[in-house]
Length: 289
Image 1 (cartoon, rainbow, N blue to C red):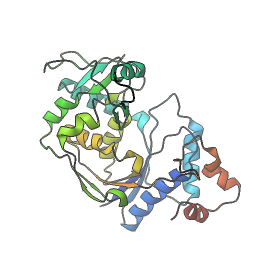
Image 2: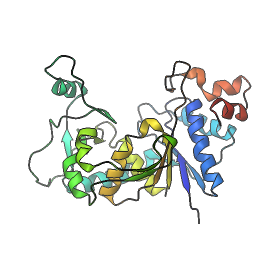
Image 3: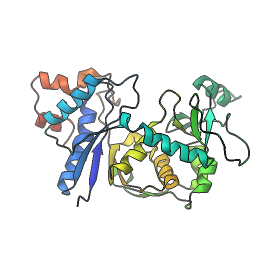
Image 4: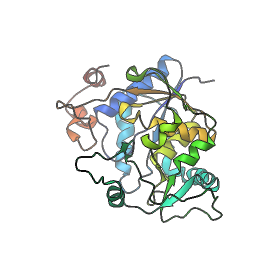
């Protein structure tokens, strides 16, 4: 029986770069060192940006790095029925509501009257001011709409959980130990997050939580830029009765100016290093492994 299970979950929207290599290697080596299992998941829910050629290159780059993974590879695009079932359950419990606000609407609602005041920022950007949030505690008797975003009513969600701390264990160097957040602060830190985008039928937060549980992931390895989003994921795990894995948020690989690498930064694409004659050991040295 496999104990420790990690995963690497890239989106096929561009070439893998040094930051991806670092995250994949850390997850792979952690699993192998413990005699566990390393999984690969393709996060391709954004069909407008995902490309088959980028997915093929993901496999090619990872094999070149010397990484191996269990098969079959999970693809989020095949998991839409599971996401819809979860959304239907949350909707039936009155934990979701439809939202038609645009980003401009949210910015306008949040604009402070005093000059220089900063807008509230959470893991997903601007914290939603609750414009479309329904009043009262009624439970909807109709299916969730398909032509609107679905937001989590954070206040009702917190009332549905049996804990006020929502803890998780972090093994990354920057936040090592038991991390807890008082549920009373969730509304200010997170707000009513989107769990299903109108053009996608799901969201990163919902999908990643359901997929980690479905794959039996015990240790989530990812960049420290997603540390704050873990509060959202732990809350969703609580709401849906899913296990909370351990989390390992690692440092980010940055360019010479200190900026986090992005897929548009083709100068640091693994494929470019490969064509220039770099070896997998060279890549490990470049990222400090």
